[in-house]
Length: 154
Image (cartoon, rainbow, N blue to C red; front, side):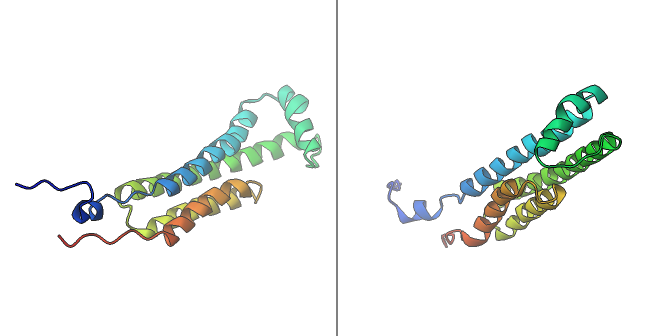
């Protein structure tokens, strides 16, 4: 019985194809989305009215948002709920993308899941987190551009 050498063409052709770059980029996007979208939703929904008026509203006003004191509670909680809901959609779509990227890495259609997660992040935050969505779009683009090597016929 002959052993295959390390440079054997059969062994090289049968190496598993991995999508490490795509998974890292999508992981960065999902983590940033969790910190920013989920963090904002968590902080706002867990804060009482005094904390909202003393810390969160001045920060939002410094960022350029014009919020009247009378409707501040409703507006900020509505935005937080929207961010939280859209983060749940982003996380679900990215999780499906991760599943297919690990279990079927040769399928180029897996990138559509990351594209959908990026669009959910982009529209869910009303274009505020476009740098975060960019990581998910880049992962989707790599699925379209990187082609797996052909499998060996043996």
